[in-house]
Image 1 (tube, rainbow, N blue to C red):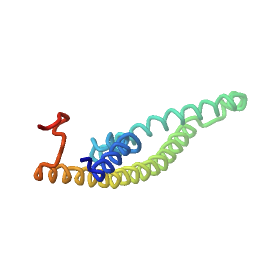
Image 2: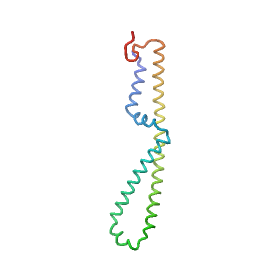
Image 3: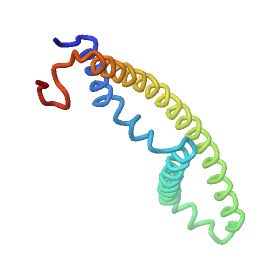
Image 4: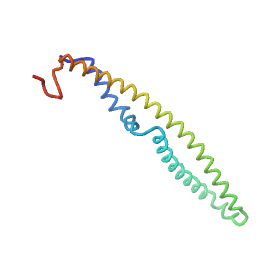
Length: 144
């Protein structure tokens, strides 16, 4: 006899594993701090590349003005301002990403808790069936 509740729960678990659970199960390998740190390092690298590209494009666009006034410019001061701009924007960018990754981690932990509850229910059904001996199949082979 097929247990409809077990089938429904197993279908729900398989659907979760195939859909949103892929990312959540992969994320489950990390502690919260490790997950956030790894993603912040990646966002730092991407921000640095984007900042360098933007400065390069800005520099190419203003190359004529820059070449005309290069003798009168205070280059160390311009460099300091560029570094402070980079650090300020980086701090804001990292803060935003910290909040995003923290919320994402917490949301996935909650969805994994619901998934684990489904697995516990399936396990309970299996234990109940094995105690009563009502299962037709054990380990994929038909019981005699």
